[in-house]
Image (tube, helix red, strand yellow):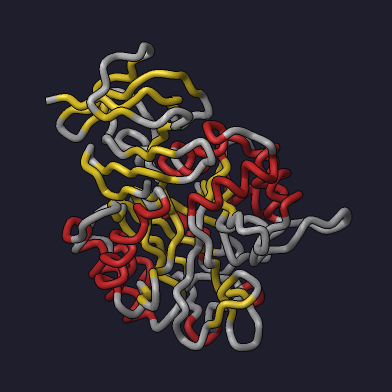
Length: 369
């Protein structure tokens, strides 16, 4: 039996939009009607219907941390995420004791199907293969060299879903590790890195398709300096991830990122639970000595922040939290767009660009009216 939602502005996920209705059947999108057919789920005037948001970088929820309580944190994020329009997410494991990192990754990837709500997509290891000078809140004592043995151990913890690894491309043994990870189908991200622009270009050639939290934990832009950031800003084929909370990256630099990256800009929360002595200060999670450890950002607010920084529409901004992240990890055959055959994961926004309804596989996941 099919269900029709509308009428609304249908924002496809690629920046385009058209008025019409969405037809859903058996958990899949079957049609975007360009005329106002009889809808059995009538929407308020001024509604916009978009794909579900996808968060590729989140560290936990509440006081639950993927590093420490992997399954409980995954269940908590799956339950909470739809309240912010998020229908899929990639749990992130930060640098920590190596054995515990691997255990957390294995637990998550083993149990992806055992939570209710937003869909966990796999695992993101943010470390431990990072440049010590740009580690920020990642503990120095747990940083490792990506030897063949550690890479095999990491791959052995990957039991299902997608795998993303953030690594500094310039550190010892990284080139060989990157080649093996890419060969095994891992999404490579460059981050927590002191790499130059030339090193960045080499990393892109080696398959590092994402720059993790652009501008943060890397050399900044300087008229006589050199930074991996420049390589990723200039190459149209790669993605830049950004934490658009107004603290991690200034508003003008968020606008610059969008101007240069467009469809390849990824909005991510990097939301950090207040654990291990972290405190919320100035709108972000910080260590006791003031180092930023993560954000307190929700992804629907990131979309609104991008709109405010650039003047673009909701339909244009939302692609940075839907189609872009889906393409970045190779999930775009199922999620990230409103198109026939895609999963019926979608969000309804009111005229003030606030989330009012969320559907996952065509079933209600959240309502706020």
